[in-house]
Image 1 (cartoon, rainbow, N blue to C red):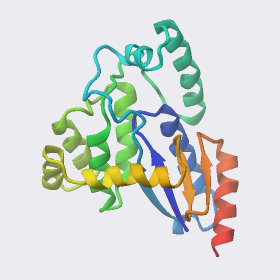
Image 2 (spheres, one colour):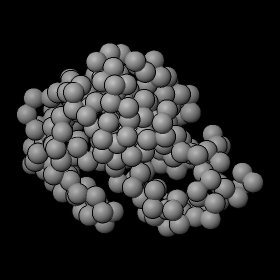
Image 3 (cartoon, one colour):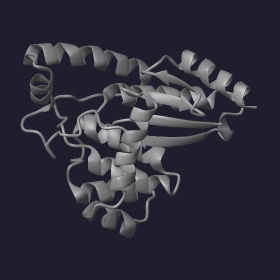
Image 4 (cartoon, rainbow, N blue to C red):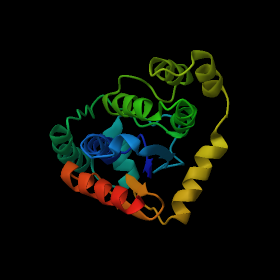
Length: 212
């Protein structure tokens, strides 16, 4: 069975949901035989390479809400993150355009390292520990995840995999995906959102049973 994960590095629910998916997959019979493919999905393709101010300023502008409302919204996300073992530091986080990070994930996928690198990108984005708008830092993080350093530097400095990233976005539209994370099982069924581990485990088990 193949699971395609449509997600964006800038989505906190994707961070939580993919962590919960990984935990669920580990607890399913036959889970080690499931092929997992990460698909690019940009929530805000028109976002600047690096937004002015902090993440709360960015959310205020994007959604037309006050800074206090943005703070309250993220308080709820932080609570969800704690339950999933995910730590957010929104005060240090900075909003960036995630297109280049998605290109780097496409390179990592060729070596089966996209899941590991995606998790590192999520942590960097939501703690501000690395600047994902900086090509050098993208290349460094990719090499730390096991990607060949020379290839990582080439991809970071150019436009390689841009077509594939845009193709994933088009594929999401064809599949009717409007929100992330979305987990697509063999292009037949899907689960959307940061679902509890037990619910996701049941969905994976049912999909495996259907595919055999």
